Length: 221
Image 1 (cartoon, rainbow, N blue to C red):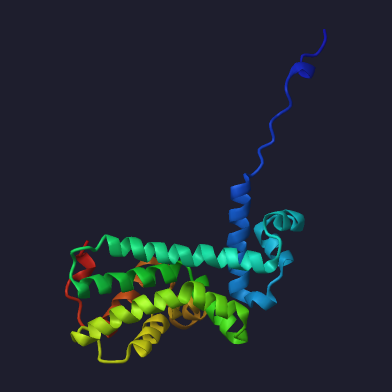
Image 2 (image 1 turned 60 degrees about the vertical axis):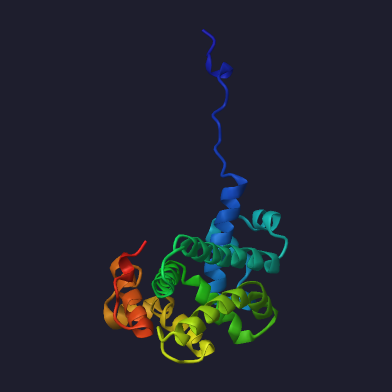
């Protein structure tokens, strides 16, 4: 009897979608750029980290600069969108409570996305065109919004009477550093900075330094 196997269609080969491949490349790029900086990273290393071939990476991104900008855009847009959504949900809430909750949101994001501050630190080392682009496109708007918020809070005595530029760096230094230096933190303290309870405790500490004793803002909307 003739085999019926010849009449069966070949098994379908499931291939990752273009969006999934692009997403894997961008995720790998964020890790490698945050570890090595723009100058120290290579697309070969990024392709290997993403589990794709170099030609496939080149198909999605024509240059290392295009890949770096796309990866940084994803990360900083995610941060801006998260803060904007949180602020929108706090309409009608008093200014100090809103500020506390936005600071907590920033710290939570920083804990789960330490690449943000690692990339900034890496590009500050070389002080080149990547830093120019980062500041103009992403950091300047965040700085201006944060400095304005801190200046208003200082005027009403809700935070220390420190110039907003200094308060900004106190916040962006104290908030993310435990997570950016995660390997050191684990060795020094035995704490896991990726654990939810550690993130919450660190947010409590930063808010206490900035705003004084908690007035129940953690339980606000």
